[in-house]
Image: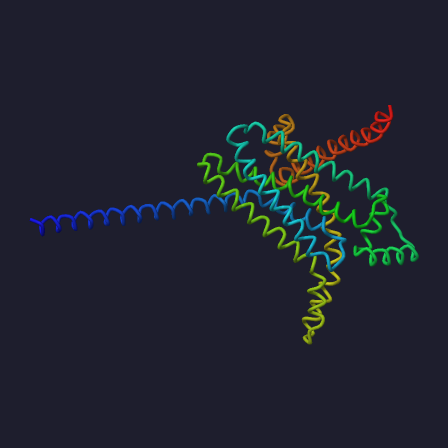
Length: 337
């Protein structure tokens, strides 16, 4: 009897272990399937945000140009850390808004779009007020002050134009890059959230975290590479190979043109991205674009909406600049009163 009972117990244990193994295998299969689903959703989200990623890259590369060479990578790293903090705040905020107040997403993105356009208009106005030429005496003075304060000569010139300390100007430039990143990151995460809005909350969170990390590594890795192109060129020129020397000279010659191009593209991107966020919230204009321009096809359908975004962004950005300037002029009088 005792032997039979022991055998029955062993059979029960074996059956239970079989059940555990089967359930573990099933759970592992489901986990693998869920991870595959998250990976697929992340890939789709990244594809949908590709256009904004290009603008993000151009804007951030433009923001960190003009910094002293030995501080370029520390500045890029400072902005990248700020970007990670932005996303650490944006991911839970996006999930909460999506769950409890989805109607808030569009107004918040419109506010961010207006801010981008405001900064774009300010940058253009600053170009008109900036002195275009510097004599040799000014250039020597700028170089000496830049060496003394550990900043780039361009930062000394820009700071003088804005009546600021050069060190404070560079810090402001980093802060501005982080603010711009916040708005672009918000748009990217909003687009990514739209691709997984019907999925469970844990899957939404996983996709948003994956997208946030991927875009930060991608954008700031490329920005770091762009700002150090001249160093790569110098390293190649030190090689014995004639081909390496030629490539190095080409990189050094090309880098200033690339930086100028990125500055132009970055400013244009402010209006394109900001204008698209604004137009998305202004339904009559958005419907007109969809019903009139898009059906035309060809180059009109491709460039027409972009032109509308830029025009709307410039108008609203200009209105915001005007309001801010009026506020700055009226505020002292109000305080004194």
